[in-house]
Each structure stands twice: as structure tokens, then as C-alpha cells.
Image (tube, rainbow, N blue to C red):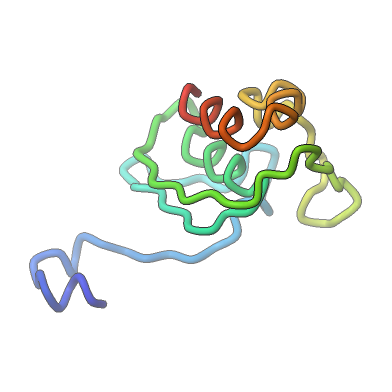
Length: 114
């Protein structure tokens, strides 16, 4: 609402949508091809889920990411309903979790390189 008040011409062009990107299908839900994907405070591998959704269908959508919480040994908790079928294959840039062992800077560098 703040943007559209300051710049009324943007009111029809900007849509804020808060939703869970992890819950639908192996590649996540479809994100419109012309979307700018923004995530703030995406803990651990949630940042990687955002990257996977933003690059789905071989489309490179612009992203603004503010990650946090870089666990050195993130657990793939596949028993939780929203993480069914979760494997390291979803995030090839993390190299089966090996990159995580090198710390936060290595994880962020791998994400940027992807």
C-alpha cells in the first residue's frame, strides 16, 4: 500500500503475495514468469526453496533474497507433510549439503553462483 500511495501509477502493477513456496509438487508452485521474487528472513533451506521456485521451468526470475540462519548440517525432515520428498536434489548448488559445512559465506556464494 505504501508504494501505491507514493507512486499511484504503480498501484495496478504491483501485487504482494505472501505464501508458502514449499507445499506444492516437486518443483514447488508455479511463479508467474514476469514476477520479481522477494523473500525476507528465509531461514536455512527456505532460501533455497525460494531460489528453486524462482528458477523453476528454466525461467530465471529476478530475486531479492535476505537469508538468515545458515545451519552447518541442515536436516532434511521428510516426515513433515510440507517436506515430503525433500532431497538434496532440490538444491544442486548445495552439493548434497557439503557446501553447508564450509559456513555461511560458502552457502551464500554457491547460491549467487547458481
